[in-house]
Length: 210
Image (cartoon, rainbow, N blue to C red; front, side, top):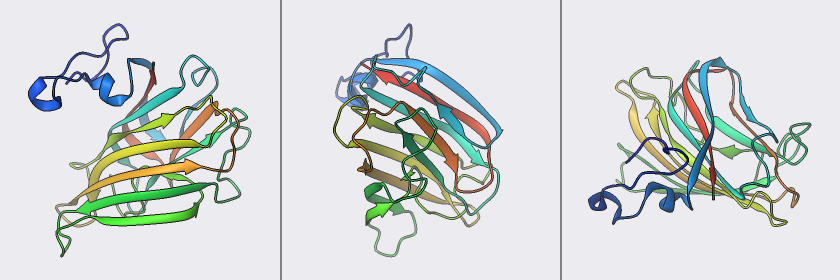
């Protein structure tokens, strides 16, 4: 599968991997790379209304090889309808969540489900200690953001893999859907940041989905 679109068009994956679908089709449509941020002790990554516009209803953020600056932190996202003057979740639990996760040494060899009727952020990696801090097992994944220009509650769907504490770090898979029910206004700014400290290295990319 191609790592990035060529001239705004995603390349077709091998049919043995995806049933003949393109990477962009699986992501919700044709993808256009809008921004690439290289992390270097970065406290947060913000995409403002110069990128989050009415051109696209749906967006996708990819996280590549992200290493947090310290352990016992997690990576999260917040949405803004006023271009970052404030964010949903700054002062209230404006999101709801359903998630499924698996850790390779779980005694039941199965998945765990988690639910929240009120949380202050969109969790990209969940509340797992030490995730992404191991130099050999960093955070990779993506999150889709749906209908940011509509008057409905905004929904996101994320898929992430990373390492939990221990040496070697345990493999963790996190899949989560969030809904922002604090506003029905158009979203024009998103912020990605760790629960504490910074993001030491890696890349974060923003795509528009036609």
